Image 1 (cartoon, rainbow, N blue to C red):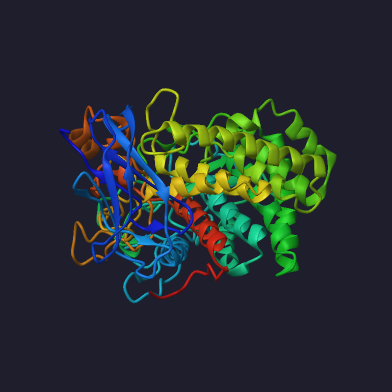
Image 2: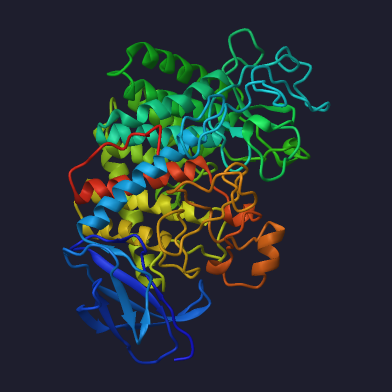
Length: 568
């Protein structure tokens, strides 16, 4: 054997469920492994399975699959293969507790990303950002600053708009409607799915921002939603939000942003009905206005050109059929109206293919399937049955991929190239598997969800847990302007429970391109704050991580609150 390493889930493995690991080895024959407790005593032993070449990792590997035992010594277990020892991990009840911790930390990150309000936290606190206190320009009166903006001549184009609040989307200070909508949806879906209202406060924070971005009656495009507000020019690292000196600019309303509000406002009208009927009614009105506006403005797209030379991402999308489908599904669940069911039936989209690919801000049809499968409100029984069948079919395909991949990941793009934010695709697949497990009762799907977390928490070709603070060898230097201690000791480190984008075959930043040129797909990642293409964070990815970790924790033990604490 010329090279080897033992890669495990560095958080841990719950008792009675698969304990899977990947071993780098070119040995043509199986290797002996031992599972050792904190005292070094062997609790279980066996032989590896020879997997062979793993193209995504660029390695030849073996795999280990056994069942995690219960343990009275829950931490600091290791897997030893042919004399090589893994990173330590937890077993049994302690692993379940750690998933609950992860769910809470992942959700808390959204609070730490809030704009327009002071962050009250002893370690990660800061003044309110973008409220107009010098040198900050503020988001209270933001106008389009592009001289060539085609909408400047319209009534709303030259006046300021109050776009305070919301969340900073990622490591910069931009706020984007499409990513905010997905994040709000994920939080409200967790509430609708579990009945636990503790995430509603955070969901409302994001939703209020979206509501403020909707053009009021009297504007030429009333009901449409602004795409974004962000800096006029990119800023460097590190930089506290309240110290950002750049002027702010608003991006023109788009069809995708407007359908996004229609979807999450319709969802909110259902979820909030029992908690705040007045707010629920407000959301229902906003959803109706957004649907009508987007229907009458079906091809207003965000483009790369429109964002050029500004301090924000383009979030370009020229196919909004999935956004329309998503909004229709949420409105159908809210109202039962035939108009929305007709829109879904005539979308021309393949739900199984979309769910199998996974969701992100550009591809949101899978979110519609997750809602329809719950059968909320006025959802027809046939629609719920159909959506559950879609989730089960896609999940069977994901299990096949997990079994075929050397690091047991459900993510295997047809061209072999990992996309920007590949870790978010793994989380999307985990949510699909979780839903299929709930709707079918098939334990294989839950085991698949656990395999997704194994990959993110260390069983991958980087050998790193891709979540800050979770694992002996975890990412610690994400691309972020405030959580930037790696650049300046005066700034705080990244809080625990933040997932980074992960391997990206495009290597779209200079740091990653220089360090990982020619690397196989799963190794196109670097733990460096300069790598925005592989090591940045986003609110949507963390919301998905919170949902998956909480689903695992509540599946394994009685549920506890997933609320967002205000202090460490």
